[in-house]
Image (cartoon, rainbow, N blue to C red; front, side):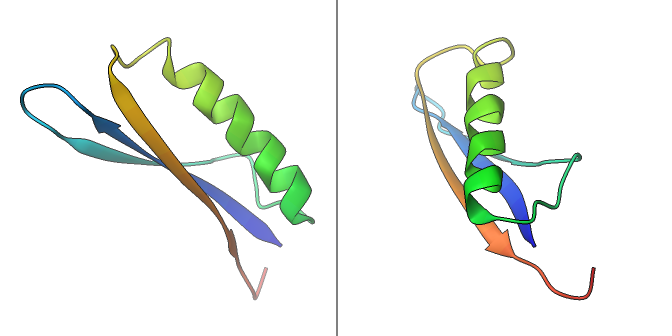
Length: 64
């Protein structure tokens, strides 16, 4: 199982980063997790003014 997370960092005069964890997962495959990451990245534009940089990871989780 994989959990999706994105890191959004503003590139303005006062750089700041925010970590966002998915609340729908975890996902059975890394591909499914990356699909969800794409949705999360698309939705960032509705809440965060540019410019910003986004990094992501699909972390393998156990015990679920």
